[in-house]
Amino acid sequence: MEYTNKIAIIGVPQDLGASRRGVDMGPSAIRVAGLKKKLETLGYQVNDFGNIECQDIEISEKEESIKNPKLKHKKNIINTCTNLKKTVEQVVSDGFFPLILGGDHSLTIGTMAGLKKRTNGKIGIIWIDAHGDFNTVSTTPSGNIHGMPFGVITGRGDKDLLEIGPSPTVSEKNSVLIAVRDLDGGEIDNLIKSQITTFTMHDIDELGIAEVSRRAIDIACKEVDYLHVSFDIDALDPSVAPGTGTPVVGGLTYREAHLLLENIHKSGILFSFEMVEVNPTLDVRNQTAKLAVDLISSAFGKKII
Image (tube, one colour):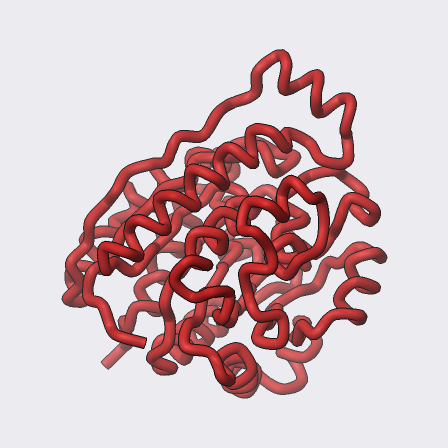
C-alpha cells in the first residue's frame, strides 16, 4: 500500500442510529478540540471536507420506524451511508487518507462501502468498542442500527443495508473486535459462529494491551494490503470518556487506548480511520472530544519522544 501524507476530514453528523441523540454534534466538538492543527503539527496536509448531508427525522420517517421497530430510521440511515460512500470513494481516488468523524456507529456501513471500490473488500478491520455492534434484525433488542454495522459489513443483516456496499465490504478473517464488554445474547451466538477474532476486556486484563495489540494487528493485516480502524469512544472507561451515549464501566484506560493506537500506527498499513459516538451533550467541558483528538493523533504517529 502506498503512503499518503494527505488527510481528508469527513464529518457525519448523524445520530438516528442510537437511542440517545446528540452524537450529531460530535464532528463539530472534535474539530473545536483542535484536530486539524494537531494533525498539521505532525506533518500532514489536512483538508477538511466539511460534513456530508444527513437527513433528520421527518413525520413519514417516524411512521416507518413505528411500523418497523427492528430497524429504526432505516431510510435516513441508508441515505446517510450512501452519501458517505460516495464521499469516501472520491477522497480515496484523489489520494487522501479518509478520517471520518461521527456521528453514531451505523455510519461504518457507508465508510466500508466507499472503501470497497479501492480495496475490493480485501481490507482488515480493527473494531474498538465496548459493544459488538453485531446484531441483526432477528437478534436486536432495541432496533437501533448502530448496534448492527459490524454485522452488516461482514455480510449479515437487512438486505437494504447490505446492498449499500454491497456487503461484505471487509475480510471477515481479518476482522478483530477489541475492548468489548457488553454483548447481547444473539450477538454472542453470531460472533461465535463467525471468523471474527474477539478480545474482551477480560483478555486485555490477562494478556495486557501490548500483547493484544500485537495479535490484533497480525490478524487484521495478514494477507491484506489495507487496514481500517473503527474507534467507538465508549471503548474507554466512562471515567475518562464521559461524553458518550452508551457508557459501560470497566473499559480501556487512557494509556491502554493510546498504546493500542500507537502500535497500529507502527504497522504502517493503516488506510482509513473513524472516531464515533462522541456526544457533547453528555460531556464535561469537551473532555471526551479532546481525548478523541489525542487518540487520533496517536493513530497518526504522535509519540512522547
